[in-house]
Every structure is written in structure tokens, then in C-alpha cells.
Length: 262
Image 1 (cartoon, rainbow, N blue to C red):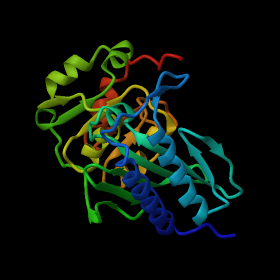
Image 2 (image 1 turned 45 degrees about the horizontal axis):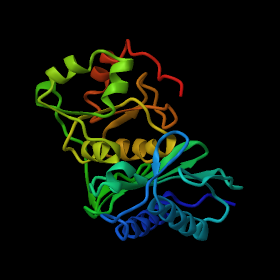
Image 3 (image 1 turned 60 degrees about the vertical axis):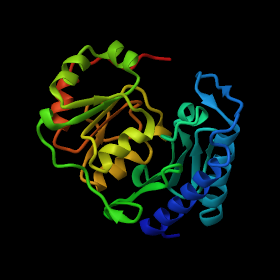
């Protein structure tokens, strides 16, 4: 059976992310009970319900595709297509009533990331891209910035204690750029993809955290890799830029230490 066109995959990813995202708004700013998973990450009923919605929509459209989600694990498929889901990226923010969380959907075909969607429900903003089709923000083309000088750049880094455990160079890097912020989760990458920031450094990322980012960044004209420069969503970390700063960041991180084992 021929694989579906990437545009068809993207349309379903957008529908699923929007539906699950609107569903999360019913739980937002309420007294949610927070549970803690074995890896000490939080989870709420909203996370689980959003993932069930994502799975239901995807399975209805493509019953032979595999699905991997943060809350319900992997459901293998019979076709070489895998959907990777993060129903609420930024659960800590969501549970505190902070609007900077998102629903993430990525799609791999034969192991290659080809579709990415991030939807910020409270802000009602959606980034969407498929390989070779460009990137859009709420249906309009969007692009990374053309800033090329550190003195004009905005750097975002998250989980500072873990960054400092792996690399001592963050204070010096922060002193070279125009602005430094400590936003986290998909909101950080959203800023690079839409041209509002130039660099993001994340020291620990799961595959569902990374799943849509490579496609979105590349289609917006940017770069996404691990700290060694490998183009992958499976690296356990993330480095994002508008492209102009990627060699600069990789040189800075050249002497960083490996990610500590959990």
C-alpha cells in the first residue's frame, strides 16, 4: 500500500493537535490533581485525556500507523509510519495556570521526521510543517530571523543546573548575546521558529519533546540537532537556531560532557 501524502499526514496532525489542545482548556486554571511518574515528571488527568483524543483521531485516519505517546507508550503499526505525541508539553506550567504550554505532534516515515505541529491552546497559535512544504503560523508562512551577530541575538536556555553540570560556558555565552531568557518547553522553540529568538539550548529532552522540532525548524529555515551537531530527534537533548548560529553554538559546546545517566 502506498504511503499517504505528507500533506494528508499534516492535516490530521493539525486536526488532532487542535482538538486535544482545545480540550485542555477545560482543565486550565482549575484545581488539578498532579501525580508524579517514576522519572519524577508530573502528569495530570488533562495530559491523559488529551493523549487519548490525539490517538483516537490519528487511529481513525490511519489505523495501520504506529503511535508513541508520553502517557500511554507505544502502539506498533504495520506501516513504516510512526506518530509521536506529547499531549501537554509543559505540564508544570499548565498545572500552575501559566499559558506557555503546547500540544506536540510529530510524524516519522521510515525513521525520518517529516511532519511537525505545535499548538499553544491558550494563545491559539499553531505552527505546522511537512518536509518540503515550508512552515506556517496559523496558516501564514513563517521563517526564522536573519540575525547573525551575537550582540543582536536572543538566547534561550532551560534547566540551568543541568546545563551547568554538563558545560561551564553558559555565563560567557550569555554575556555575548543581546538578551538571555530562561523560558522552557515548546514555547522556547516556538520563538526561534517564528523569528523572535535565535538560539535554544536544552540539556535533556525525550523523543516526544523533540518530535516536531526538526521538521518545523528546517522548514522555517533554521537548524535542529543534538549538542554534537547530529540532525536527530533521538539525541536526548536539543540545540536549535536560526541556522546562522549553529556553528557558533557547536563550537561553544565542543567540550560539554555527556548527558548524565538517570
